[in-house]
Image (cartoon, rainbow over all chains, first blue to last red):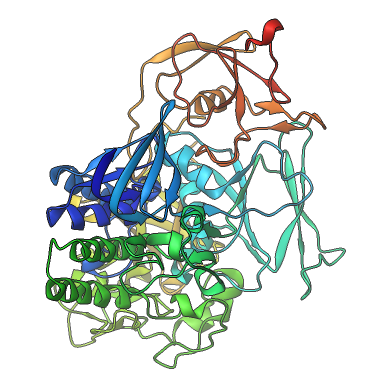
Length: 528
Length: 108
């Protein structure tokens, strides 16, 4: 029987991170993954990640995946693909199906990093071809270069639903609406805002009544729900779509932990049935660890840190490092993890109604109900100020763990402080040079450079732009408001692209100056 | 429909164009991509019909988990087309129920 110091199940962010930490300390590590390619879902994540530098903030998920893989390879981690772990036993023996045979291997430690699976909802027609999971949409677009459909309705306003809606538009689909049975947007407001300003209507307190079609989806009907989640008659709305995308949450894939006999709990704060783990990620069985979504649904950023902690702890357990070294290293990782678990989207905040930010600013209710901050609400946030000349307007209105904008500004105009969930504020003493680094660094695409009065009755707004075709200087079109409504005519006066911006182009449009604080997106006029 | 150029990902690395058949009709796809992706780009939505109610099924999870997309590939039923790489000359057929067997028990 083959033996390893550590057997890791799952080559996603948690598994690879654990493998790196363990291998770095001299352990012989194998990672099994059922897929043909490693990286879990990281290679489908094309948006810039949140957090701070230590969490790899502002780096796109697939680049983080590439970095992890390269590091694991350079450390000699053995990654076995198309390998399905079908058994895990309390003695840390593992049975794994590879091709058409089963291997039996023994680990001195085992990490379960199997991730999560997507939840589903049922409605008449939900089994029709054309009803797909949000993960399927990401797989088709971002791995295989294929559009899931032409016209899509998204169900689910959590971060997955919001991020995938944006990705669908980036790929070239039309997102006709975003619906959620919940009364409030579940994901980050900045993700919602960047979808809304492209013109996608949000239907909160709405669910799918039925999907139309005999052989495949040809349309969808949604309806408003009452407080008992029943559709209110007469509120039905119909859309012609060829695709219905479901993003209704994730559940931990914890069957292996249960099978091994680990103590399990049904914990709503962790979004499902999970193994109970201590601060090292160790389950009730000594030497069996769990990290990432399998032990509680969170972001990939926290999964990577949990994986690192498990790798370090396993090294200490087997004597590759001292207890003292383990404690010191784990403490460092815990600080990083704590940084991510703050703010209004922290795991403990699930389902709680929040009315004010940490700074005491009233939360935008329009953002929660319609996906964008209303004109009359935007002025109260500390990132939104007025000045002469070009200056940043930061429409970041919720306490989320993210601070790249603060580091990005060479002139130190933007202040967040050491608490990374704080709302960014503008230091009026510092002079903005209009370099645009903050605009490109904002993972939420919530920063705009505004010159409110160019002296000729116009204003200039620089916005992040991640679509094709990229408008050229001189292009004429329409400026859209935060809600995606056409507000005025606009002309592109500059388009900046740079390697440091990482595919986020900075598009500057000229609008009549009364729209300086209203126009937030550019739609090019159809070329004749 | 294929994405020619993506604003973040640029162009996609794809295998050479190969021919395969779907219910006897010749189609084209990229070698090595999942069969389901080649079918999707050829406009095929229905992969199989369920046994009892004869209801259509197609791609649902696209990561080999839900088994909605199974078809008969080179005579073998229940092949998860979303994770099975396309090869030149593959014979892909719509699956009815749990897949048919030829006389003598051998898989057709």
